[in-house]
Amino acid sequence: MFNHHRGLWGYSGPTASGNGDLLIQGTGMGGPSLAAVVTDLIELGVKSFVRVGTAAAATSSCPAPGGILIARDAVASDGTSRSLTAGVHVVAADPGLVASAVADLSDSAALGRVLSCDLPQTPPSWADEHASDAIDMSTAALYALCESEGIPAVSLLVITGGETNPLAENDLNEAVCVAGSTATRLLQP
Image (cartoon, rainbow, N blue to C red):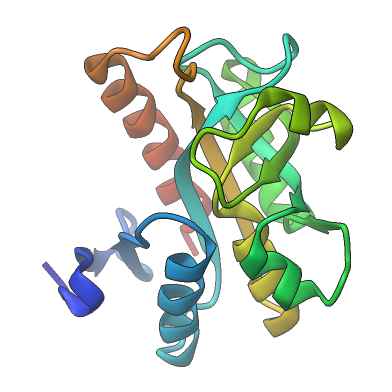
């Protein structure tokens, strides 16, 4: 364990190649918590972010529960990202990290847009209004904050299925491991 600052677990160590350092850090739930943690990490010198999180499917083009959505951009609909973007509607992931994630995950993931909201159970109709494939609570805040600091970021989102089609715990853990493995490869120097 690297730290337990802000009550969130963090782990640190060398990358698999031994040519760099890797930090795995919990960020809590939602934009405000993520922004506080990411700001701390930027101040400590973190150079890029690959977020592994969850999202609820909002369209039929979204991956099935257990699938991974690579968030190419995010609609800033939550309070934190709206504050950080001063009215910008959509914030983008780093194109290089997106391309690397697409190459790494090939056919096992989809590329799409996520709607970031403050409500854990956001109605899917909200995503329709913004042409979004999935709904989460943090990606837009990550992209807005990292964009303002010139730091590359991408979110790999495991689709949970929502209330009507929940993903079993074992399946969720397996999908998070797949996304986490991709994240470590993307961060190799």
